[in-house]
Length: 175
Picture: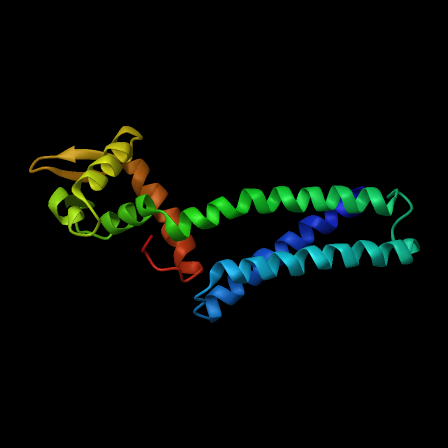
């Protein structure tokens, strides 16, 4: 079981490293397709690694009990869990209009913006009002005079983290 879990973590780290390298070096238009391919390669690599260990089990230390079927099952389950945890984070970074709004606000001189300026960027005033209300209720924005909003300290920390990740992956600020 342990070899399957260790290999799953190694293959997932290779998946993340591959994404980082590809996103840094190339402008990827179809990110979802790339991720699906890399998941398939990662899964295949994990299966092949377990198969190689099953052929040559003496390469493992004696302290590691190796059952190929159990190692494969546990490793695949862990890989699936890691992908399930990773993919929502990726899609929040790449498509969330709330994240894009906060990053845009962070790039303004006083970390604030007027409601009318945001309304011009999005589809409807109702949409903007609902989004800003949610961000305000969650502690990311404070209301200012003249019908505006300002980032809270909590939001600025959040934005620094997500902006850093987006810059590393060359995703741009947009949602």
